[in-house]
Image 1 (tube, rainbow, N blue to C red):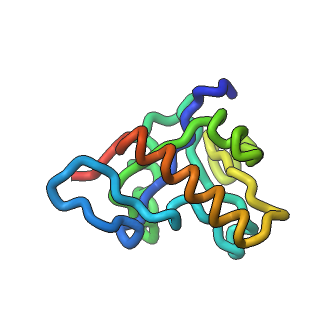
Image 2: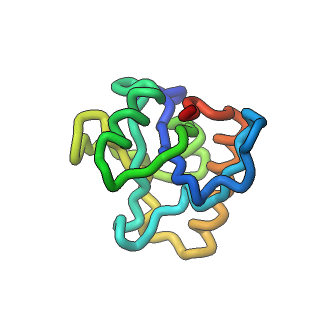
Length: 129
C-alpha cells in the first residue's frame, strides 16, 4: 500500500451532526472509533481496489448496512498516529482494518479525533443523494 492510498470509511447517518444543504462534512469521532465487538479493528475499504462510490455501493448492498456516504483517511495519516493498517481481504478482497488493539479508551478517542479531522479536511469522497 502506498502512503497516499485512501482508506474509505462508511458514515452511518447517526454519526453526522449536520449536513442538510452544505457539502461540508460534520461527522463525529464515532466514525473512526472501533467497537469491542469489532475486536477494536476499524473496517475500511482499500482505494486501490474500490473507489469511494464502489465502496458505498458494496457496503449498502447488504440490507443490514446503512451509510450516507464515504469519508477517507490515507495510509500515511494512520502511520503518523502509529496505527497499523492491515490489508486482510476478509471478508472480501479490498477489505482492510485499522488496528486500535492494545490502546486505552483515551488513546482511541484521541486517535479517532485526529483521523476525523483528516477526513473532514479531505471532505466527502462520496455522498449519497
